[in-house]
Length: 107
Image 1: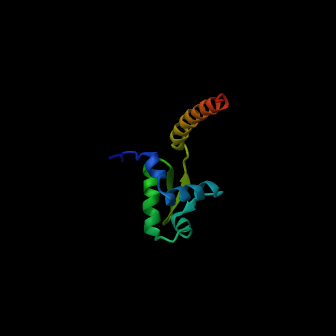
Image 2: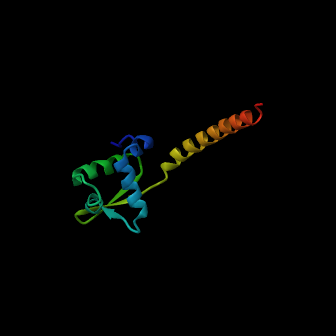
Image 3: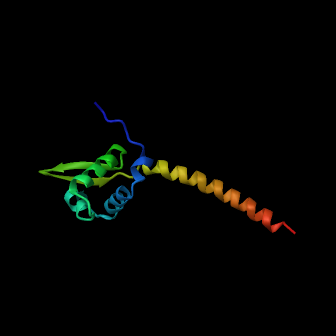
C-alpha cells in the first residue's frame, strides 16, 4: 500500500524540517539520522519523525546501509513552492509599481 504524498507546503512549514533540509543540502554526502539528530536539541526519535514527514512530501530519500539509515535531499518538490512564490512576487511587484505610479502622479 503506497503512502499518500504529503503536501510539500505542510512539510516545510515547520522550522525544524526546514533546518533539516538546509543541513542535507549543505552536506557533501548523505547524513545519517544520528548525525542529523546531533544538530538539534530534540530526541533522535523526534528528528526521525520530522524526516518521515519530509520523506512523505518527497523531500528526503532514505538509503539503508547496514544498521544505519542515511538521508539524501530531493529538492524537486520545492519547485511547487517556487512557482507559488514567483506568482505572488509578480503580483505584488505589479501592485507596488501601480502604487508608485499613483503616488508619483499626485499633486
